[in-house]
Structures are given as structure tokens and as C-alpha cells.
Image 1 (tube, rainbow, N blue to C red):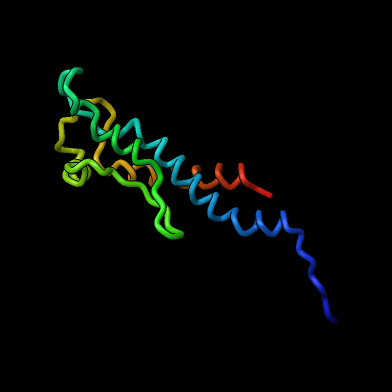
Image 2 (cartoon, helix red, strand yellow):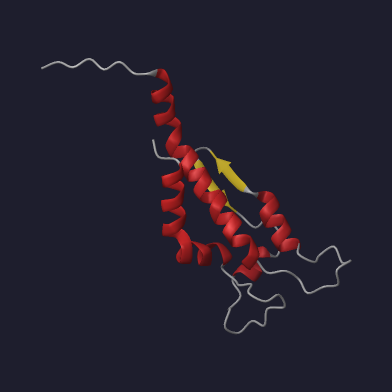
Length: 122
């Protein structure tokens, strides 16, 4: 039996772009949920470094390289802070943590994916 398939252009375009859109939205929701747990400096309000790590991470947003989306904390000292030991660090801002992206993903990754797929279902 031979079957001819005639694509609806709009449906074909949607099917081609949907996976990319879903991955981008997953990354964006992960960033949004992560922002409140990214450490902030306890420096004085007028000090420009206060909140720099959090501000620059959020401002960096979701990055794309080819077909890969990623999140980053571009502040020069981010890697150092990211790898602090939560159990031995006295965070100056309550409810902030090291390994912020990983922590959000471990706690809410499945929920993020489920919500994003549900919002974008055909």
C-alpha cells in the first residue's frame, strides 16, 4: 500500500520548531525559579557589588549556541561561589545556596518539564 503525505505548512513548521521552543522555555523557567536562591553580597546598598552575582546571572538570561541552550553566571567569581559548601557557608542572604542551577533542577526539574510541555502541547 502506498500512502502520500501532504504536509500542512503551518503544522510542519510547528513540528519543526516546537522542540527548540520547549527547550528554551525549560531553560527560562529554570532561570526564573533559580534567581531567588542565587547568593547576594551583604555589602551596603549603595555598593555596586551588592547583588552582582544574581543580577548578572539573570541579565545573562538563556544563552544559545547552535542548537544548545544553556544558563550561566558570568560574574568573574561565580564559579568560586557556585562551589561553596552549603553546610559550612554562612550565607549573608537567607535562603541562598551554592550549586543554584543544579539545586533548582534537582528539586523542580520534572515539574518544569511537565509544565512546559503542557503549555506547548499540540
